[in-house]
Amino acid sequence: MAERHEDNSQRFNTEGHQHNSDDKSLARSCQASSSSSCTGDGGSSPGGEGKRREQDIASCCRLDDLKKCHKKLGWLSFSSTHTVLIDVSIFNASKQVRPQEGRDMWHSSFVKMPFSPASVITIKTGLRKLPTQVNRWEIISKKLDGLASKKKLEVDDVAEVIIKFNPQYKDQWTFDALFSLVKCIPKEENYFNTLFPKIAALALSLPQHVKKAIPLLQTGNCAVITLSQVQISCLLANAFFCTFPHRNTSRPNAEYHNYPPINFNSLFGNWSDRKKEKLRAIMHYFNVVTDERTKPQGLVTFERRCLRDSELRSWRSCDEKLSNLYVTSKGNIEANCAGMLQVDFASRWIGGGVLGSGLVQEEILFLMNPELIVSRLFTERLADNECLFVTGSQQFSEYSGFGASFEWAGPHKDKLKRDEWGRLQRQILAIDALHFKNPREQYSMIKVTRELNKAFCGFKGHGDDEPDIATGKWGCGVFNGDPQLKAVIQLMAAAKAKKGLAFFTFGDEELANGLKQIYHLMVTEGITVEKLYGLLEDYCAVQQADSHSHVDLFKFIRDNIRCSRSHL
Ligand code: APR
Image (tube, rainbow, N blue to C red; front, side, top):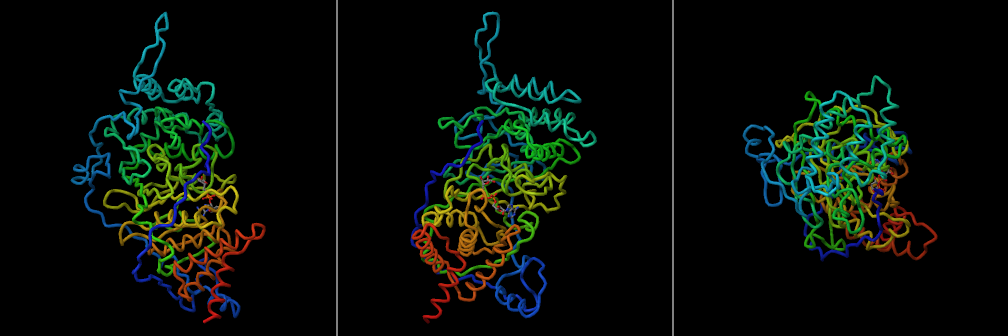
């Protein structure tokens, strides 16, 4: 199935309602003491020039000044908007994880499960090949049982069964990547032939583990799903064997055309080094979750949040000052910010090309934390005012490189603590930036406002004791965003959300230094969000006036601040 690509027919938010802000501004600029430079990159403090440089960026804070905390949770409980797939009474009484009883829902608001009695397949039987309808799970479970009973399996056995479940794709789906993986991995590392039967057994156990219908997190519908890591592994084992019905086509009129693909067929074909490394991460995940000694016992929560019109506040009248900012060109979001809200530079089809050839920030995040992939089963395409939060996903692998140089780098031992609901204290926020086929398109206040609202939707959180945000060049890679503009947009959204930001420029020294300096200037000048919004309006007007030259945003802001200072 063709990998889902971004279309640009994105609806843009118009300006929100007038924002009646009487909030006390939050500008907490922790003046770093003169002795400590806040390069955050462990930069040393050089001589005179260095002193001046330090003063230019003295408003930034250190990473450990930012909040890493977690909500105090009460009992695990379900509600009309929070579906829990495990028995909450047993869990609250004994912390034991048992599937919540329930009934199958073959319905447009629920995940259509492979074992549903309503899932039928037409086969031709008897001498006269009369078409008859049989329950699909009868066929699937028999085949999976056959595989699970073997000690070792070849890729041929896996491919044959997957095509048996999806006969209409016999001539389309290929398995060359899976074949090549098994062939090219050195014998001592090659556990795949004995792993295939375990994945089949895990897939076969789905009806015993997931009994309550899984609601779809549909567009415009703020809702939450909490399920166990074991339930997730059974669902992903079924995705591995491509058993989910109605999920193999994204034709415009298809039932799930607004959902990302979940079946793993596209991972198994089109051999490339990228595919090899992706498959190594996925197979490692299954190797861990099919082993009684290492299979994880916690819970994970997926929450779709929508920015309702009433929450859309006019950016023009937001008098918040900038909140804390830590900037570094070293490290990355996931390695340095445990305990903070980590931004996933998402596609609106959550997970993007993780099951295809994509291999940038979101796909890498999903390969290192494969439980995130299950969000594709029930998360409809994100609208402009929506985001997805995931709490509790486990990191199973390490990686090196990025894009074409990505390599799976072995197991990761997740040392994070778990909260009262048994969830690892990792919070991931998926927000999809706009994709600018022509970068010039982004210099428009309709698009700037859409990005502000998207980031604010994710950053605003729910309560006080929420962690600060770890982000970076959101929308500035595949999506062609202007890093300076996106940095200012995220600063504004964080200020309105009263959250601090840790900004990783991922090796971009120039951006790191420029951001520290412009942040320091704006903080010392007491620049508010509304003032910045006005500056962006002028900036976009200047950019649009002359589409052949590019005006550096940080310079534009600096010149404007100096100019308004000279008029005082
Ligand atoms: N930490 C910090 N910064 C990172 C990290 C990381 N782990 N990984 C990458 N970056 C930086 C890189 O500089 C990269 O160029 O973020 C930039 C943007 O990353 P992209 O993944 O290209 O993000 P974006 O431009 O938003 O594209 C999103 O790509 O992964 C797909 O599904 C995703 O369709 C979506 C699109």
